[in-house]
Image 1 (cartoon, rainbow, N blue to C red):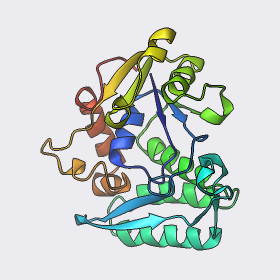
Image 2: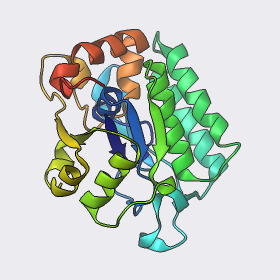
Image 3: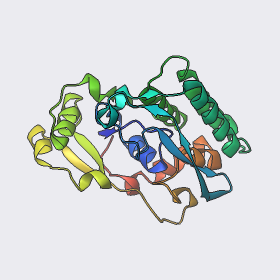
Image 4: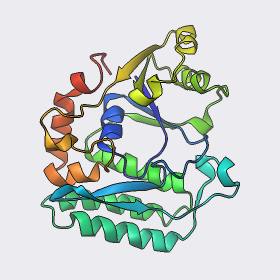
Length: 241
């Protein structure tokens, strides 16, 4: 089963839950960069008050303006971005008893600043680091390395087919525009993914808005991974991964 998602900076818990349910993440890095999305920013919540939030944003230069692809966006002020990222995450989660886990995720991302100026590389690394902390063993591929058609649904269906996926895990946003025809042609099943909004667990408070770092800092990697695994049927699907 594959999930296809743009690289996000320290993605939301809803995004992490979807990727954890899949056994393959295709990083959608060859579509247009959107400044109002989560491709270069994340909402950090205060450890003791998830409603108190602050944006963490990577200053980004788009060489082709609004037409710049995600893979081509570059850090405008790399060193300043690095210091702000490190400072804000420590400020928000440094007091957590699970800080050592958050710190390991953070260090993986900070190391990336030494090797690249591409925003997508930094944000992809932030997602990989969170998935690794939660024990995910799946495969990561990039859409820019795979040939696909231009149509929105055609592109997604082609990417799923090229990677040998038999199921495509689709979030509620994607379901609103998805055309199932191209998937039917490839013999791929579209599986709806629904994130719990109010199931009585505080971890899901703001799961579609705030970074998964808050949940990780709140309960730690083992408890968070266990919680997500126990809710896999509710979160996504019963289809084996």
